[in-house]
Image (cartoon, rainbow, N blue to C red; front, top):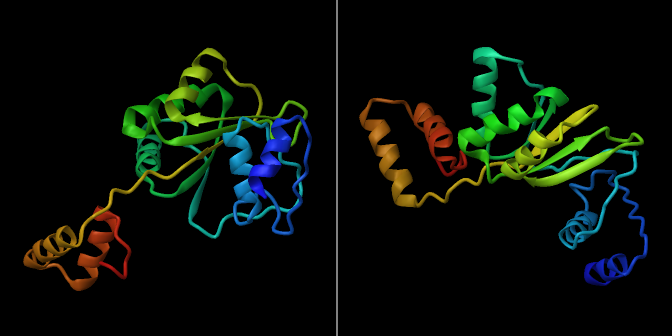
Length: 194
């Protein structure tokens, strides 16, 4: 039904999607419709109500540390994170945070910046870290800001690379438990595969 509904939306109709799984529709079949509507350039506005999150992993960071080593390590962790992250940021630091993420190699990651959620001046901008950094450098936001950043794509690792690295770690005298932990951290392979 998605293509037909998107065509109606592009034709100027308004539609409401009501989900018993709650919003933001991440663990709901309605997410396909929302995604297709966004891809077609249709404005999608969530209405406050029950909230549900995807059963896939995500990390909620709250507010970033303001400065120093803690901020640098948190930004580095976020830049390499392989799953979705949700962050609160002060509007005065948004462009700086996006600049730092871009410098850490996260410039092409998909991101949404939501401002003043559920309020009169609610705004959600989607793009990449780089495109939204450029936007917010020239248009400083006002109000409360939430950043949702997609996880980094983990490159596929072939079996022979995993086995070779495992052998090298065993040769160093590491325990099976340490080898598994290192393979998971280093290569991003699933624990069972490691």
